[in-house]
Image 1 (tube, rainbow, N blue to C red):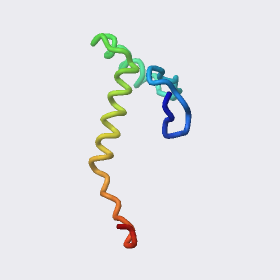
Image 2 (image 1 turned 60 degrees about the vertical axis):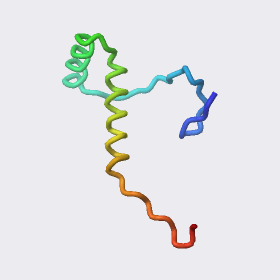
Image 3 (image 1 turned 90 degrees about the horizontal axis):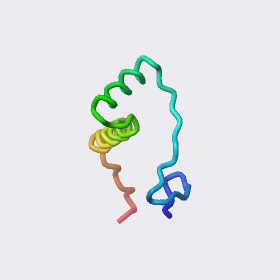
Length: 70
C-alpha cells in the first residue's frame, strides 16, 4: 500500500471513487463521445486531468532556493 498526497493509504490497484458536479450539457455529450470511441468517461477525465497537470508543470516557474540553502 502507498500513501497519497493527502496521507490516505491506498493499494496500487485501487482507484478510489471521486465525486464531481458536472452540468448535463457537458456530461451527456462527453459520455456519448466516449462511448462512441469505446472509452469510459473515467478514462477521458483522467487523460484530461493528466494533460491539465502536465501543462501546469511545464508553465510553472522554478522555485528559487533560499539564499542560505546549498
